[in-house]
Picture (tube, rainbow, N blue to C red):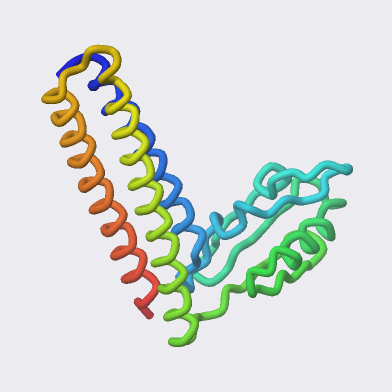
Length: 187
């Protein structure tokens, strides 16, 4: 396999790895009835006029499976943090006791679990689409190498390698969604 083809395969592998990582992160944001600090990762607090990630203005911990505790580093931020959590529309109610903010994560109903599984499957499908798009782009780049003197056989070998990668990463997405579905449906 020529160096040009190897580079395309390596680039595709790196891109697919990022797609899997993104898919995993999106799946982790879907709560499965258990409290997790990552549920608050996308929340930004108004910190002296600039939006700042919640985990940069306080510590976020889970003392037990149903509770998240946010302890701001400045007491003056309590109301701003509480407001940001409310506006994030997570389906939880923050309780401000003047020192920390407690969030009780309610147990999930069967119907809500099914909705979350649908959402998780949608994220997994997005991950698969991303992997397939990377395959398409890589194959197009390999075909363009013909003008640089790469033989038909080498192009076929390169495309076969890209297909092997695609299959492997699609399986990884399936494994992620299977684990997430099991996690969501476990009461």
